[in-house]
Length: 354
Image 1 (cartoon, one colour):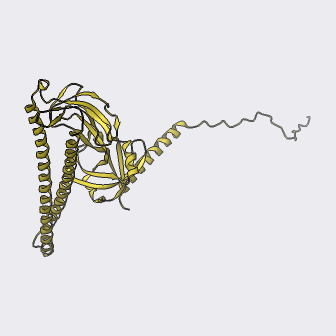
Image 2 (cartoon, helix red, strand yellow; image 1 turned 180 degrees about the vertical axis):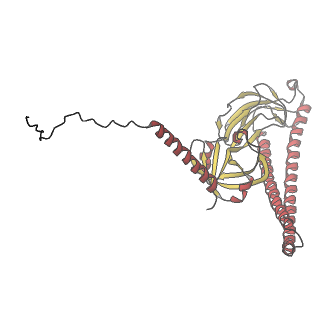
Image 3 (cartoon, helix red, strand yellow; image 1 turned 45 degrees about the vertical axis):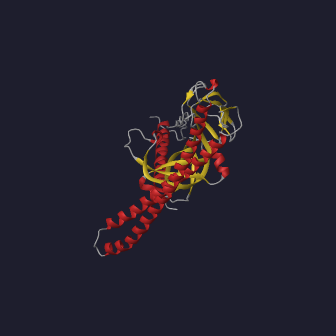
């Protein structure tokens, strides 16, 4: 039998080396991760902004100057249009006094009566305004006397509360009464400032009525201005023109509004729970709608709450009232910047703890 031999040499196996397949990007995970990070960052930002910052929303305003006359007039030509900016002394319109229908036929007595009534009207308005100013000063003194009286009573009330004679609410009511009286003083002072401004406007109107323009003679030595140019007494912007040319505008009707840029301010609407975070004279950061940053000083609080403007009412949110805070520019240069954002929305920001 032939012997069987095994092959002792190593067998070499040949094959094709397979490369590991390339892993494709898991887009689902990436999208979910991005969404998660966005939501997480939003929650962190919301928490920080709510916990460490107080945000107030408001508008940039200016005082509105009302163009009125004590007599019937007709405007024959407007030299300005709505939303146009004007400077003090610029001509706004050319007008005619409607003293009587048949004045060309001659009736000196009637015209003289109008002149007399006109002068009487200025005199009565001036006297009434001065009287109101004096009464407001007396009212402020009464408020201050009441504050002094309550403060003296508080010293006794504190001891009685400490001895449990009266509940703590008695002391709180007294302190709230003082705050209310202080607010009344501020509002009365604002009214006095308005009346003084109105008094100066009366003087302006009366002086303007004496400018040498086309006149008629009454026959009694008195002249009446029939045609005249009305010039703006303030720097500002024409907000609204109420009448067309050649329409009859009756006495005391408003011809137009001029937004007075000499007095520009911001009204912010503050949540009642955050009122303790703010103080009069405090400087706050302001951000306008276009991202421009500025600052303003708290000039006044109006504790009597106001309705929140529709711009800031959240959909389906429960209606809330707000305390109004008034801010003024820190400098004249800053006031010039604020004019660009008249009636714009603003955000007022303050940190809570420092």
